[in-house]
Length: 381
View 1 (spheres, rainbow, N blue to C red):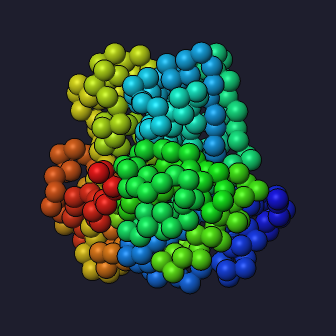
View 2 (cartoon, rainbow, N blue to C red):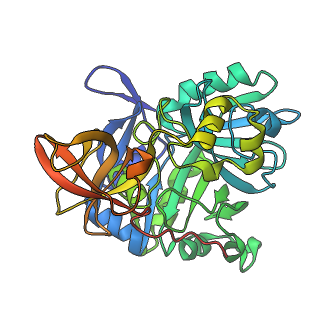
């Protein structure tokens, strides 16, 4: 499906586009797609997800299959993540790096025993596919536009999924799944692949379903009293409170995994071996320290500090020294105040360090804050 935006460029639509319109969503262009930005309002949707269960359409993201003799070993050539040690039916976070050690994209990868599946950002789809095909000529790389993705997030997510689970699976299969587990399930009469994961900081599931069955499954989930639809705006405030990176803001080709404070995504064996693209920069920054590091930033008062805002150390933006920038920022409904992330010199990264943000000529006092702003509630068993 497709539609036209104001510039005459064709926008893609997901299999749930009709449902979004029916539910009164405000639809906007996003990464080449027409997507729901909100339904009843950002704060209401954000809060509902934190307290009940939100349904997100994430079908705009790129689903990429990797097949071959050893796609895991091949993928490790372009990512410092541990792919060859990823057990079957498990999922892992990773980064694609370029020759200079900058982040091309971040992704989730699943080992399905017979092949791997990557889920990557919609805005990087064409770049990622070209990059993978260039560097992994021994791997069969196939995009799967026939697959839709639905995320169910929040403290009631497990109960909701269990309620639509077909009886053939037996009791307890949902409770037995822990964070980053993947399972083939049958939900509301539909075959799906479900991962216990998400990008909100809450417990939940990301469900891959045939595009033709997506509308049926979404309606079955929304029939549950605990579930409401949530748009991209609340998804952004949820991930920001959870201290999770957004590509294009907190991650770019200028930013390394060490600067982004994502060393945890690179196991020790990969860091030491340095057998991946961009390893020279990564190993140098691990040895000598980066020149900047991603931190939480908590503005004083109620005024949000948005991405791109310059940060200063000293008494004011006029007399102080420019020391960094805000990469993501907005209002955090859960913490009832503005929250942000940004990059500063490591010497200024200590919790409680005082900073100044220049917001359109006005100084806003900020402090370096611990991440995440809202605690993660993943189901780890």
